[in-house]
Structures are given as C-alpha cells and as structure tokens.
Image (cartoon, rainbow, N blue to C red; front, side, top):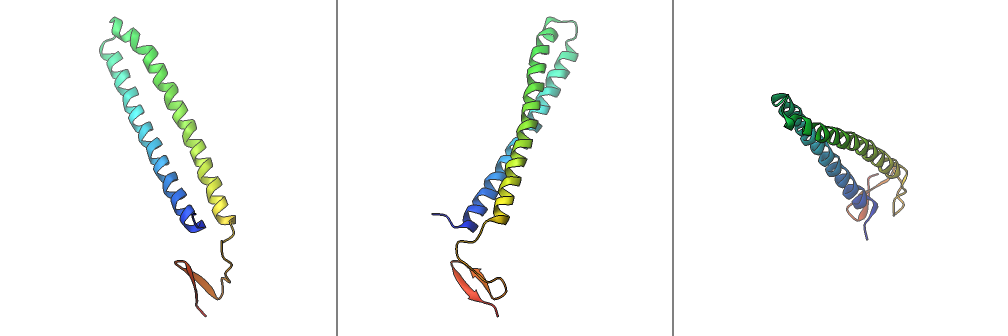
Length: 109
C-alpha cells in the first residue's frame, strides 16, 4: 500500500511523463504537417499533390485532437494538485512541533 507522499510522488512523475509525451507528439506531428505541405508545394500540379490534401487534413485533425488532449491532461494535473493540497496525512502531526522523517515523526521543538 502506498503512503500519501509516495502516491503523490508517483502520480506527479506519471503526469510529467504524460505531459512530455504529448508535447513530443505535438512536435513530431507538426513536423509531419510541415513535410506534407512542403511535398505538396514541391509537386504542385502533379497528382501527388492532390492526394496529399486528405493526409494534410487528417494530420491537422490529429493535431487538434492532441491539443485537446493537452488541455485534458492539464485538467488532470490540476485536479491531482488540488487533491494533494486537500488530502489529510495518514498519520496526524502537529505542524508546529513535528515533521515526518521517513516513516517516523521527529520532534523539532
């Protein structure tokens, strides 16, 4: 079973990894959109340029979907952050006299 601090740390790490993965997907998809557009431009007037249009539209929709996913992940992050702030500790402590040291309490006053 996790303690609240361990769960908070694991969730924070998972959120950061997920945010980075979506950011990288946006970067790569944006590069793909640029390549599709450049290829269409280079072959303007050829049949290949016409076939590039549906691919470009699908890639742009995928980018919009990733942008939506980024917003939802940000909401997840905010919800988890709020839960961390409002969660009560598993063991009671007096903030003015004690603090956690690993799994034990230490008197600071």
